[in-house]
Amino acid sequence: MYIKRSEFHNRRFFLGVMVLVLAVVILAGCGTRRAYRPRLPVEKQLTRMGYTIQVGAFSMVQNAARLTELLRDRGVEATYFVAGKGLYKVRFGNFPLKSEAAEKAESLKSAGIIDGYYIVSPDEYAVAKRQKYGNQYLREEIVKTARSFVGVPYLWGGSSPDAGFDCSGLTMTAYQLNGLDLPRSSREQYDTGIPVELDHLSKGDLVFFATSGGDKASHVGVYAGEGRFIHAPGRDKTIRVDSLSGSYFRKRYIGGRTYL
Image (cartoon, rainbow, N blue to C red; front, top):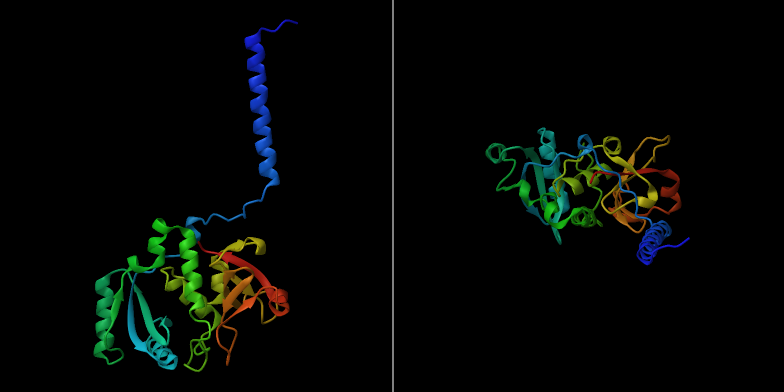
């Protein structure tokens, strides 16, 4: 059968394109797979923090913890954090308007609970800069915040300054200081997030453990990458970094959650 030269070249070109496409598909399938990252539905996205009040500049963490508990006793959700080497501050409240934050701060100042204060604006948080710098920037900032607590004593847990900085208090603080209103308890945090497989964890995700028996979340930490996480291990211990591959945590691991 006679085939015109132009038609022959067209067929050869078409076959070449098909071979190229097939090769790309095969190579893509044989290459390194991208880790699956679940898309966060709107109803699962954490609420952003509004205006918060910042007070104190304590050289002793115990004093920051006492003020935190004093505020909590008055029905004000508060947390202390590391503001610099050897310096601790306290933040509290979550107000939609700056005027509301200022009114609350002034009332506490009049009552002698606080002295000076600073109102933190929502655009000062790392989450407000995510659009410019990307999601990885926010993840790194959450880990950086959690890591700043390493070595800090376990000091409070919601009932007294002696109870301790509990595990879920640490994770909540790491998120709130970056502008995301994470729930307080480990079980609420577990239920709020989107499940992530162990091999697909990213920095800033949370990892959960059943340390009280059964399969309910009772301990949580911030995943820091390379199989390690930051957590508050318990009374009379300091906040530290541990490995997920350690026998104790490996046996009690129940899953990871993402919020970003």
